[in-house]
Length: 220
Image (cartoon, rainbow, N blue to C red; front, side, top):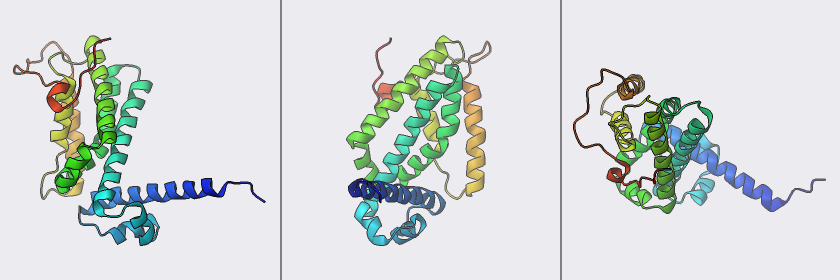
């Protein structure tokens, strides 16, 4: 006979269903675009349509769930990189490579669901996660510059916008070529960010966190 709390088991089951639905939606939207039927998401998640609509009553709620889950993943990638890598440059490089899949999906969602995305941007949880991410990137950028590994005429805002531009999908490009090009051009981007004796200075006017809606933390 078990002493497990039925309420706790139910909550765990509900969390599992929610996680399965979000994962299924992430994969299907990435594979097939914005018009994936909700019923197909339920089938891929292994739940009934009633369970899906109980967790996410409409497509906008599902997109919001996918987006916030992606933001949590990106922040976790940044934190792990900062905590585990021996120096800031390796942490930045690791973040750029490992966060690209999540950030590319976020870019697609912002294009396919523009109205929903505006409301997501105003969500307090999204704003908190964005501030956390930008603070981590700002710390890594300044540390890498202090170490002499990152050129001094770039800012965390430059890094953020470069990734956003590189990850923006090109219409008509097949998925395999898109992924291959992203991998190659992110590598080129990282090489261009390295400090060195022969680098050419960038045009005047660096892009900081304030320019992209972030808030630069005070220097330690």
